[in-house]
Image (cartoon, rainbow, N blue to C red; front, side, top):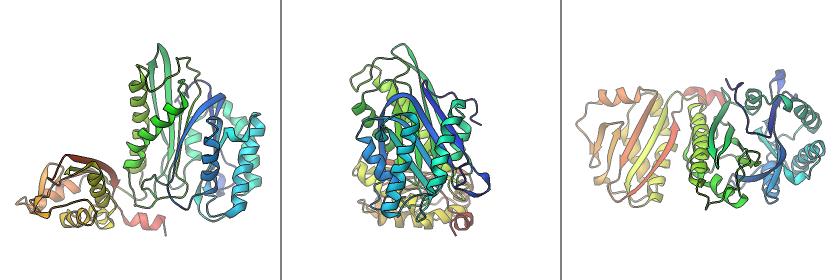
Length: 393
């Protein structure tokens, strides 16, 4: 699927089986820059966060990185001081191979919470990753990131900046425990553009807010959520800052890559077979609109109704009512796509069959107008089926 994707200049990647998962499944990945890269990152806001998140937050302060090393299968979360030592040992071993400072290595883990990392397998896996990285196999790298994902997730863009050819390539994993900020997801963004570190961090945060922080699969926030971005400058453009004439072009391409990855995550939601866009308009503020949209998107009553092709608009009214957004019941209008379900807080005269036809689709929108102001927001979500329960049983 992604075998022909070309990485930005100066980057290599690999995905291998290190024996962390049974059956020879790929379970370690590497993204490596041949030269120091300016780094940016955004992490989970969960008060319980994994050891690698703590280490990455510290290493991000260094501002420059050479590599990202990750494992799947074990999250290295809730593992105490031993888990922190393991995360630091991962970074130290990769730094030894590269010949750089451990602070220039990011480490990530995803999988089951609680078990300690099999550090012997991790350490031997790091050496193997660097041996394989010369092949720059994007497909295998993306596969090695997966847990309950059914497919790898890669997005890319090629464009011009300052007369130079620039590429952005992003990787992501995630299918369940998805709810900002952010989701049980890992995402790595690489570019050969030359970018100021402060501007790079701001651009990534903005892109994440418009993408990964707009999705929800099941309303559960993870302990390991991480988005890391590396810009190594190998394209040879003048250093981009927020004042650069082509800054908006660069940010638009970055946001496009992040948005595509975020949509892949929702479409691959655990057990899901419907993609649902929740649009709220007419709120007193953008904040109120977001509260209402998230309440609808995260409601298990709504998710299960969509799974059963049951257009229960009453559950939507209920969700926006408890959302903490200001709602005046008699002003609310709700459409399923363009089909009017609720008018002035009451059922419209549209036949139920017309609404059933909409929710029987694999992709539809819930459009809610609170008719109170100019605030608007969108959240992307999915339904919840019996398969979700089986996956998480």
